[in-house]
Every structure is written in structure tokens, then in C-alpha cells.
Amino acid sequence: MIGSHEHAPMNTSHLPLLVPVILSGGAGTRLWPVSREGNPKPFMKLAGGQSLLAKTFQRAAAVAAGGSIVTVTNRDYYFLSKDEFEGAKVGANLKPVFMLEPAGRNTAPAVALAALQVAHAHGRDALMLVLPADHLIRDQASFRQAVEAAAALARQDYLVTFGIKPTAPETGFGYIECGDPLGSGAVAGRKVVRFVEKPTLERAQGYLGSGNFLWNSGMFCFRAGAVLDEFAEHAPDVHSTVAACWEAMNENHDASMQEIPADEFEAVPSISVDYAIMERSRRVAVIPGDFDWNDIGSWSAVSGLVEPDENNNRSTGDVLFVDSRSTFIQSEDRLVAALGVDDLTIVDTPDALLVARTDKVQDVRKVVAELKSRGHDAFKLHRTVSRPWGTYTVLEDGERFKIKRIMVKPGASLSLQLHHHRSEHWIVVHGMARVVNGEQELYLRTNESTYIPAGHRHRLENPGLLDLMMIEVQSGEYLGEDDIVRFEDIYGRT
Image 1 (cartoon, rainbow, N blue to C red):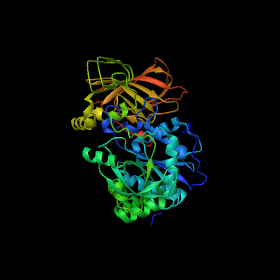
Image 2: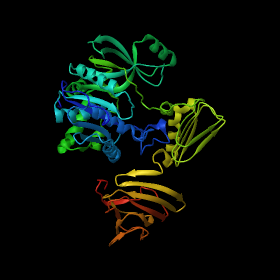
Image 3: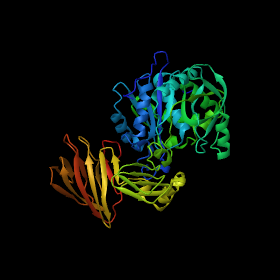
Image 4: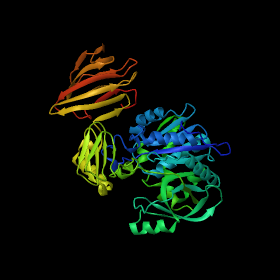
């Protein structure tokens, strides 16, 4: 066998070690145009300016007992995730551990790999609290109470899931049928009779009326050793292939950033943890969550976070409603006026605008699929794109030219690179730049510039203490982001 800073932390003195595991994957296609493949739902900023991932990290930190939080995410999101965690400011005593997937393989492989990591670092008796990165929970006190109840059952080798008391006959969630009670107290667990797929409206109404069904939240608590044993019994193909990934990682097991090898990971079945073990195990319990919970799965969920006006309109940003009703508008950087419209959802970003009937917002993923089939970059990237060194923003994109604004963080550096098909002209507008241009190394200050011909090796670095801002003018026959050859890179992208 293979072995929130603003909230008071949970009293864990009587509990075994509890290690939160954050699952941060998925593109969130129903939340386009804000959520995109290159900047997915967990990184969406909510009304308070904080992302769902940062809120999840704070929630995990408040219940962590042992100073470790494991995050399983795509390797492309490592630097974005790291920035979010540093911005959450939960204290220096917590050690984030990142396990980086080369591609998405659903939740079962992610949970199994995290279990191997927790068992290796803390022992098989350590408890795991598995939290998706895209949930919003505001009632922290009730959440911590539910975690304590789940931990008590997990110590008895139950696989514990968290169910949410339904408030409506929701057809977009899976359900859990509850059985006999397990113990007593302020939050009492129940045995799980069965898991139910997303139901029809008629069945959902019956579940709501029975009072014996809960929404399946996708959050779990169990001993690392117990869940590994369940994988071995009920999903041996997942267990064996994940074990091969773990062995291939060699001496990487104690690092704070652990890359999962692509060749071995490709052999792992893509299956959810529900299908792999939760629906098959004989030791599954559920804790009824008496806390607010929102999986932010669509624009309807986002609009529900905003207080309506007297005409049931909701908005974020600079918005004007005239003779309009039951309409939601989100605007990032300009005024949006709605005149004489009803039951619309309008989401405006700098490079894409969504207009949908509110009863059709669950189908936004069809827009993303169509963009992808056409090869349109809007399915993947925003006009402003985050990179480990900072950001770039496309200001204008025309035939044989592109203009970007580039921001480089203090001490950060782009890779030593060249482009075969384009030349570049760099103009510093703020800060100082250290530039490698062919055989030259030079410093540029505000209003100074340099020209980089196609085929020249070049690098941009910010040696100062302030952000470096510059304008890049590209010209050439091909201006795609894939026209790049990297020779050296401090972020491991060569």
C-alpha cells in the first residue's frame, strides 16, 4: 500500500492534524467572458475585489491545524495562485504546497495525489479537508462547526461529505439522500443512502418536499490513509496509476512546488471522486451544512450576490437603468446603459460583451465552444494577460502590427528569447529597464527606447523598486504569442 485572517481560527486542540486540500481547476465556461481558460473562475474578482481562490485560501487557513495547505492546480496557474495566496495575508506560519497537474484529469486523481502527499508529510492518520476553489461561504462560524463535526466522523474512518440544505428545487446540483443519524450534537452527521445525479424539476421538487435530501457540495473530509484504502478497493486503476505518478516524482515530495509528470499522469483515468469511491464505499457519511453556500456556477449565481433595486435590477460597475426590469449588468471599465429591457444578463469586459436572456445563462458554455471551434483567442485570453513577471495588455491589434502595454514587477524578468517573424520597439514610460538586445546590454529610463530586429536574442528586466511600464510595438508577418524561442527563464518555461 502506498502510503481568514479576519476570522478567528478553529479550536483544533482536540483534533488530529487537519490539512486543507484546495482543488483549483476547471475553466468555468458558464462565466465567460470574465472566466476564460487562461484566467478561470477561481481567479474571478468578486465585489470586494478578492478572488474566489483567495477567499477559499483564507477559509482553509482558518481551520488548518498543522501549518500546511495543499493546492492541486494546473501548472499554468501556479504563479497566479501564488500571487493570490500572498495577497490573502493569512500569516507566515502556513506552508502552501502546490501540486501541479500538466492537464486536467477530474477530481479523483487530484484527491488521490493529495492524499499521498498528506500521508507522506503528516502520516496516514492526518485528516484531509477537500475544498473546491470556486465556492463562496460567508458564514465562517457555521462552516467551522461543520468541519469539527466532519473531523469527528473522519477519525472513525468515515468518508465524510458536506451536504447543503436545499432552499429551492435546483436542477443544476447533484443530491445526497440521508439515512440514519450518526451521533448527536449541534451538527449531527447522517449515513449516506445514495448520491443522485442532477434531477428533473419534478424530482427536485419531490426531494425538497421530503426534507431528506441535501445538495452535494463537493467538499469532503477523511483520513489520508482511509481514502487511499478506498481507492485501492473501489478504483484500483486510479490507485495504481496515481501511485506510478507519485513514484516518478522522486525527491520532489518535500518541495513546496511539485510538478506531476505528464507521461505518467496521462495514464490516470479521468473520473470524479464521487464516481470513483464515494458512490461505492460502504462508509460514507454526510454533514448537513447549515451555512450559506454558493458554487458561483453561472451568472445567475453572481447576480444573486448583488442587492436588487426597486425594479429587481442588479449591477456592478458604472451602470444606468432606464425603464428596465429584472436585468443584471456587470461592467468593468465603462458606462453601460440599459433602456427598456427586461430579463437580460449583460457582462461587459474590455474585449468581449455578453448579452443573454437570463433564462439562457446556463448555456453560455455554448458560446465558448463556438469561439474555440473558430480559433478565436477570446475563449482563452483577456486583453490583459497575467504572466509570472507581471502583465501585458493588448492596446491595438491590426494587420502586421500589435501594440502592447507591458508591466514588469520589481525584480522580475522576462525570459531570454527571440522571435522569428516579428520585430519589436520598446519605449519605457515609467520606471527603469535593463535590456539585453543581441550583444548589447543597456539601461533605459523614461522616454528612452530600443529597437529589436527579428531573430535577435533579447530580454527585459526590472532592476528597480517600482513597477516598470513600457509600450511595445510589434511589426511583422506573424504576431502570434507562439512565435517565441526561450533560451533562459527564471520561471522554468524553457
